[in-house]
Image (cartoon, rainbow, N blue to C red; front, side, top):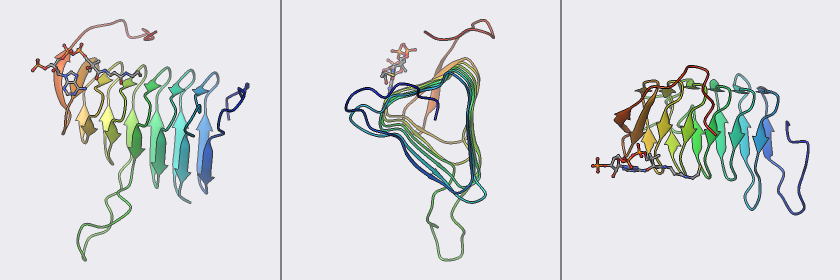
Length: 161
Ligand SMILES: CC(C)(COP(=O)(O)OP(=O)(O)OC[C@H]1O[C@@H](n2cnc3c(N)ncnc32)[C@H](O)[C@@H]1OP(=O)(O)O)[C@@H](O)C(=O)NCCC(=O)NCCS
């Protein structure tokens, strides 16, 4: 785990990893009152790009793959799942599809990112959004289900402070 300093009273992340977890350099995991939970199934993979920040209470659950690009910001209590865990009907398998989050993406408080979601570079997901499908780069998407409400431009190498 990238964290080099464990502050007094902070939680450790909860990691149930039967697959692969890759964490880039200078990532920050803020586990103040709530741990960050990573769950990875046997064929699953989580990768978190360098310089990304996960706030407390974030849950990542990967049966296949969750990829977070570099310098992204994941807000408190955000859930990112690439599997629904349970089938909807008796003759269906649980929906499972990789999740890909680009670079310099900001995901607001308590957003939920469902299987198969792709979020383009630099985009912002509003607090409380539920995201499925594709969100383009350089936009703001909010609501349930998340819809684009704004587009913007920025240098490709911009890092949101
Ligand atoms: C998405 C966000 C960044 C605002 O982006 P913005 O481009 O400034 O958007 P605006 O405030 O101009 O709002 C645009 C529209 O989206 C709506 N909207 C904004 N945020 C929303 C949200 N989280 N959920 C639902 N609708 C939202 C606004 O009501 C507005 O709707 P309208 O055009 O019908 O009036 C902000 O609302 C947000 O959710 N921030 C996350 C905050 C957070 O989690 N902080 C924790 C620290 S990481």
